[in-house]
Length: 151
Length: 139
Image 1 (tube, rainbow over the protein chains, first blue to last red):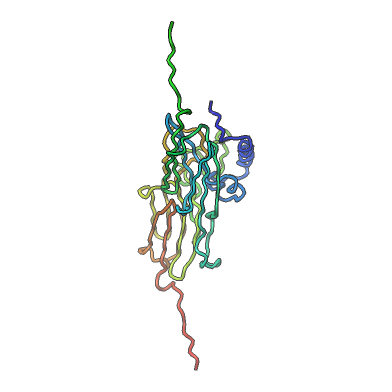
Image 2 (tube, chains in turn orange, cyan; image 1 turned 30 degrees about the vertical axis):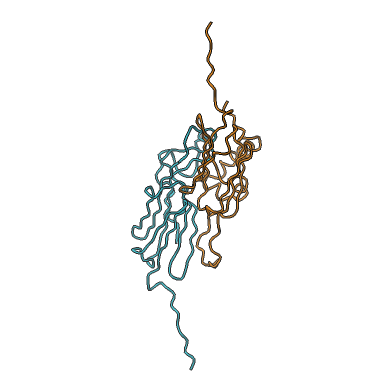
Protein backbone atom coordinates (compact mmCIF):
# COMPACT_ATOMS: atom_id res chain seq x y z
CA UNK A 1 0.00 0.00 0.00
CA UNK A 2 2.72 2.43 0.95
CA UNK A 3 5.12 1.04 -1.57
CA UNK A 4 5.83 3.66 -4.17
CA UNK A 5 7.67 2.89 -7.40
CA UNK A 6 9.85 5.94 -6.67
CA UNK A 7 11.64 3.85 -4.10
CA UNK A 8 13.27 1.21 -6.18
CA UNK A 9 15.71 -1.44 -5.15
CA UNK A 10 18.79 0.62 -5.97
CA UNK A 11 17.45 3.52 -3.98
CA UNK A 12 16.87 1.20 -1.04
CA UNK A 13 20.42 -0.03 -1.25
CA UNK A 14 21.71 3.55 -1.35
CA UNK A 15 19.70 4.32 1.73
CA UNK A 16 21.12 1.32 3.54
CA UNK A 17 24.63 2.49 2.74
CA UNK A 18 23.80 6.03 3.79
CA UNK A 19 22.45 4.76 7.06
CA UNK A 20 25.59 2.73 7.64
CA UNK A 21 27.60 5.91 7.14
CA UNK A 22 25.42 7.95 9.45
CA UNK A 23 27.42 6.81 12.43
CA UNK A 24 30.68 7.92 10.90
CA UNK A 25 29.60 11.25 9.49
CA UNK A 26 27.93 13.09 12.32
CA UNK A 27 26.78 16.03 10.21
CA UNK A 28 23.36 17.38 9.47
CA UNK A 29 21.77 15.29 6.69
CA UNK A 30 21.14 18.31 4.50
CA UNK A 31 24.77 19.38 4.55
CA UNK A 32 26.09 15.91 4.11
CA UNK A 33 24.17 15.65 0.90
CA UNK A 34 25.38 19.01 -0.30
CA UNK A 35 29.03 18.21 0.30
CA UNK A 36 29.49 14.82 -1.27
CA UNK A 37 29.52 15.27 -5.03
CA UNK A 38 28.96 11.62 -5.83
CA UNK A 39 25.76 11.55 -3.92
CA UNK A 40 24.71 14.86 -5.28
CA UNK A 41 25.10 13.54 -8.79
CA UNK A 42 22.92 10.59 -7.88
CA UNK A 43 19.90 12.51 -6.74
CA UNK A 44 19.53 16.20 -7.24
CA UNK A 45 17.23 17.87 -6.56
CA UNK A 46 15.87 16.08 -3.53
CA UNK A 47 12.12 15.76 -3.71
CA UNK A 48 9.07 15.26 -1.59
CA UNK A 49 6.12 13.61 -3.25
CA UNK A 50 2.67 14.30 -1.86
CA UNK A 51 -0.79 13.56 -3.11
CA UNK A 52 -4.47 13.88 -2.52
CA UNK A 53 -7.62 12.57 -4.19
CA UNK A 54 -7.14 14.54 -7.40
CA UNK A 55 -3.51 15.56 -7.66
CA UNK A 56 0.07 14.60 -7.10
CA UNK A 57 2.38 17.28 -5.78
CA UNK A 58 6.13 17.36 -6.07
CA UNK A 59 8.33 19.70 -4.09
CA UNK A 60 11.95 19.76 -5.27
CA UNK A 61 14.54 21.56 -3.19
CA UNK A 62 16.74 23.46 -5.63
CA UNK A 63 17.86 26.91 -4.52
CA UNK A 64 19.50 29.38 -6.88
CA UNK A 65 18.43 27.83 -10.17
CA UNK A 66 18.13 30.08 -13.16
CA UNK A 67 14.36 29.76 -13.86
CA UNK A 68 15.05 30.05 -17.59
CA UNK A 69 17.05 26.84 -17.46
CA UNK A 70 14.40 24.85 -15.59
CA UNK A 71 12.83 22.20 -17.72
CA UNK A 72 10.08 19.75 -16.80
CA UNK A 73 8.96 16.92 -19.00
CA UNK A 74 6.50 14.11 -18.48
CA UNK A 75 6.49 10.89 -20.43
CA UNK A 76 3.82 8.52 -19.18
CA UNK A 77 4.64 8.14 -15.47
CA UNK A 78 8.11 9.59 -15.62
CA UNK A 79 8.63 13.15 -14.54
CA UNK A 80 12.00 14.64 -15.49
CA UNK A 81 13.34 17.77 -13.86
CA UNK A 82 16.40 19.37 -15.37
CA UNK A 83 18.11 22.70 -15.03
CA UNK A 84 21.29 24.48 -14.20
CA UNK A 85 22.58 26.15 -11.12
CA UNK A 86 24.91 28.77 -12.50
CA UNK A 87 28.43 29.18 -11.30
CA UNK A 88 29.42 32.54 -9.95
CA UNK A 89 30.64 34.95 -12.60
CA UNK A 90 34.06 33.88 -13.85
CA UNK A 91 35.73 37.20 -13.21
CA UNK A 92 36.15 36.41 -9.52
CA UNK A 93 39.70 35.26 -9.06
CA UNK A 94 40.13 32.03 -7.08
CA UNK A 95 42.21 33.81 -4.45
CA UNK A 96 39.28 36.11 -3.76
CA UNK A 97 37.23 33.24 -2.35
CA UNK A 98 37.08 32.84 1.39
CA UNK A 99 34.59 29.98 1.20
CA UNK A 100 33.10 28.00 -1.64
CA UNK A 101 30.62 25.47 -0.37
CA UNK A 102 27.61 25.82 -2.64
CA UNK A 103 27.32 23.18 -5.31
CA UNK A 104 26.75 24.32 -8.88
CA UNK A 105 26.23 22.72 -12.25
CA UNK A 106 23.67 21.08 -14.46
CA UNK A 107 21.34 18.45 -13.13
CA UNK A 108 18.74 16.05 -14.34
CA UNK A 109 16.48 13.79 -12.35
CA UNK A 110 13.70 11.47 -13.36
CA UNK A 111 11.07 10.35 -10.91
CA UNK A 112 8.66 7.54 -11.59
CA UNK A 113 5.26 8.57 -10.35
CA UNK A 114 3.04 6.02 -8.60
CA UNK A 115 -0.04 6.75 -10.70
CA UNK A 116 -0.84 7.91 -14.18
CA UNK A 117 -1.24 11.66 -14.56
CA UNK A 118 -3.04 13.92 -16.98
CA UNK A 119 -0.07 15.46 -18.76
CA UNK A 120 -2.10 18.29 -20.25
CA UNK A 121 -2.78 20.00 -16.96
CA UNK A 122 0.54 20.03 -15.16
CA UNK A 123 1.48 23.29 -13.55
CA UNK A 124 4.71 24.32 -11.90
CA UNK A 125 5.99 27.18 -9.84
CA UNK A 126 9.41 28.17 -8.53
CA UNK A 127 9.20 29.78 -5.13
CA UNK A 128 11.79 30.36 -2.38
CA UNK A 129 14.13 27.95 -4.12
CA UNK A 130 11.52 25.19 -4.21
CA UNK A 131 10.15 23.79 -7.46
CA UNK A 132 6.46 23.05 -6.87
CA UNK A 133 4.75 20.87 -9.40
CA UNK A 134 1.04 20.05 -9.41
CA UNK A 135 -0.02 17.11 -11.54
CA UNK A 136 -3.67 16.08 -11.82
CA UNK A 137 -4.22 12.35 -11.73
CA UNK A 138 -5.70 10.95 -14.89
CA UNK A 139 -9.35 9.96 -14.66
CA UNK A 140 -8.42 6.29 -14.74
CA UNK A 141 -6.20 6.65 -11.71
CA UNK A 142 -8.75 8.37 -9.49
CA UNK A 143 -10.50 6.26 -6.92
CA UNK A 144 -14.05 5.22 -7.78
CA UNK A 145 -16.72 4.72 -5.22
CA UNK A 146 -18.46 1.41 -5.64
CA UNK A 147 -21.84 0.91 -4.13
CA UNK A 148 -22.25 -2.29 -2.21
CA UNK A 149 -25.70 -3.72 -2.66
CA UNK A 150 -27.13 -5.26 0.43
CA UNK A 151 -29.40 -8.09 -0.43
CA UNK B 1 35.60 35.89 7.97
CA UNK B 2 35.87 33.28 10.63
CA UNK B 3 33.19 30.77 11.42
CA UNK B 4 31.51 31.48 14.69
CA UNK B 5 28.52 29.17 14.76
CA UNK B 6 28.01 27.81 18.23
CA UNK B 7 27.82 24.02 17.77
CA UNK B 8 24.70 23.33 19.78
CA UNK B 9 22.53 26.31 19.04
CA UNK B 10 18.87 25.78 19.65
CA UNK B 11 18.19 22.12 20.05
CA UNK B 12 15.97 20.35 22.46
CA UNK B 13 16.91 16.78 21.76
CA UNK B 14 20.62 16.34 22.31
CA UNK B 15 23.52 18.04 20.60
CA UNK B 16 23.64 19.02 16.95
CA UNK B 17 26.47 16.77 15.95
CA UNK B 18 26.44 13.26 17.27
CA UNK B 19 23.13 11.60 16.73
CA UNK B 20 24.05 8.96 19.21
CA UNK B 21 20.62 7.88 20.31
CA UNK B 22 20.48 4.97 17.92
CA UNK B 23 16.73 4.82 17.59
CA UNK B 24 16.47 8.13 15.76
CA UNK B 25 17.89 7.33 12.37
CA UNK B 26 15.19 8.96 10.30
CA UNK B 27 15.98 12.22 8.60
CA UNK B 28 13.07 13.94 10.27
CA UNK B 29 13.85 16.24 13.11
CA UNK B 30 12.10 18.54 15.45
CA UNK B 31 11.34 22.02 14.19
CA UNK B 32 13.80 23.48 16.66
CA UNK B 33 16.75 21.94 14.90
CA UNK B 34 18.97 24.04 12.73
CA UNK B 35 21.43 23.32 9.96
CA UNK B 36 24.18 25.64 8.78
CA UNK B 37 23.49 26.72 5.19
CA UNK B 38 26.31 26.20 2.67
CA UNK B 39 27.88 29.54 1.76
CA UNK B 40 30.16 31.12 -0.79
CA UNK B 41 32.13 34.11 0.42
CA UNK B 42 34.29 36.15 -1.91
CA UNK B 43 35.96 39.47 -1.89
CA UNK B 44 35.70 42.32 -4.36
CA UNK B 45 37.76 45.51 -4.18
CA UNK B 46 34.98 47.30 -2.31
CA UNK B 47 33.17 44.63 -0.38
CA UNK B 48 32.75 41.09 0.79
CA UNK B 49 29.94 39.11 -0.81
CA UNK B 50 28.25 36.22 0.97
CA UNK B 51 25.85 33.85 -0.76
CA UNK B 52 23.93 31.29 1.26
CA UNK B 53 21.60 28.56 -0.02
CA UNK B 54 18.50 28.73 2.12
CA UNK B 55 15.76 26.87 0.26
CA UNK B 56 12.24 27.25 1.54
CA UNK B 57 12.90 30.33 3.62
CA UNK B 58 10.43 33.14 2.90
CA UNK B 59 11.56 36.74 3.35
CA UNK B 60 9.53 37.21 6.53
CA UNK B 61 11.23 34.23 8.17
CA UNK B 62 14.75 35.44 7.45
CA UNK B 63 16.83 37.31 9.93
CA UNK B 64 20.23 38.81 9.26
CA UNK B 65 21.82 40.75 12.06
CA UNK B 66 25.16 42.14 13.09
CA UNK B 67 25.84 42.26 16.76
CA UNK B 68 29.21 43.72 17.59
CA UNK B 69 31.44 41.70 15.31
CA UNK B 70 29.18 38.73 14.83
CA UNK B 71 27.13 38.31 11.69
CA UNK B 72 24.16 36.00 12.23
CA UNK B 73 22.09 34.46 9.49
CA UNK B 74 18.95 32.72 10.62
CA UNK B 75 15.92 31.50 8.77
CA UNK B 76 13.02 29.15 9.16
CA UNK B 77 12.20 27.09 6.11
CA UNK B 78 8.65 26.25 5.15
CA UNK B 79 7.44 23.38 3.05
CA UNK B 80 4.99 24.56 0.42
CA UNK B 81 3.85 21.21 -0.90
CA UNK B 82 0.19 20.33 -0.47
CA UNK B 83 -1.51 17.02 0.14
CA UNK B 84 -0.61 13.96 2.12
CA UNK B 85 2.96 12.66 2.05
CA UNK B 86 3.60 9.69 -0.22
CA UNK B 87 7.36 9.67 -0.38
CA UNK B 88 9.73 12.09 1.32
CA UNK B 89 13.45 12.59 0.93
CA UNK B 90 14.13 15.86 2.64
CA UNK B 91 12.90 17.66 5.68
CA UNK B 92 13.56 21.37 5.59
CA UNK B 93 14.82 22.75 8.84
CA UNK B 94 15.77 26.10 10.10
CA UNK B 95 19.06 27.55 9.03
CA UNK B 96 21.54 29.11 11.39
CA UNK B 97 25.11 30.26 10.90
CA UNK B 98 27.34 32.86 12.41
CA UNK B 99 30.51 34.53 11.22
CA UNK B 100 32.94 36.80 12.88
CA UNK B 101 33.47 39.90 10.80
CA UNK B 102 36.27 42.36 11.21
CA UNK B 103 35.89 46.01 12.04
CA UNK B 104 36.81 46.79 8.49
CA UNK B 105 33.25 46.11 7.39
CA UNK B 106 30.92 49.09 7.28
CA UNK B 107 28.17 47.31 9.19
CA UNK B 108 25.64 50.09 8.68
CA UNK B 109 25.82 49.64 4.91
CA UNK B 110 25.23 45.89 4.69
CA UNK B 111 22.79 45.03 1.96
CA UNK B 112 20.76 41.80 1.89
CA UNK B 113 18.73 40.25 -0.88
CA UNK B 114 16.81 36.99 -1.03
CA UNK B 115 16.14 35.49 -4.43
CA UNK B 116 15.29 31.92 -5.51
CA UNK B 117 16.12 30.65 -2.04
CA UNK B 118 19.59 32.19 -2.06
CA UNK B 119 20.52 34.94 0.34
CA UNK B 120 23.07 37.40 -0.98
CA UNK B 121 24.75 39.74 1.43
CA UNK B 122 26.92 42.61 0.38
CA UNK B 123 29.25 43.71 3.13
CA UNK B 124 31.00 46.91 2.06
CA UNK B 125 34.49 47.54 3.34
CA UNK B 126 35.02 50.68 5.29
CA UNK B 127 37.03 53.38 3.58
CA UNK B 128 40.24 52.62 5.38
CA UNK B 129 40.11 48.93 4.40
CA UNK B 130 39.80 49.50 0.69
CA UNK B 131 42.89 48.95 -1.38
CA UNK B 132 44.65 52.13 -2.32
CA UNK B 133 46.54 52.60 -5.45
CA UNK B 134 49.74 54.50 -5.08
CA UNK B 135 51.02 56.32 -8.05
CA UNK B 136 54.66 55.81 -8.68
CA UNK B 137 56.20 58.88 -10.09
CA UNK B 138 58.88 58.42 -12.60
CA UNK B 139 61.38 61.16 -12.38
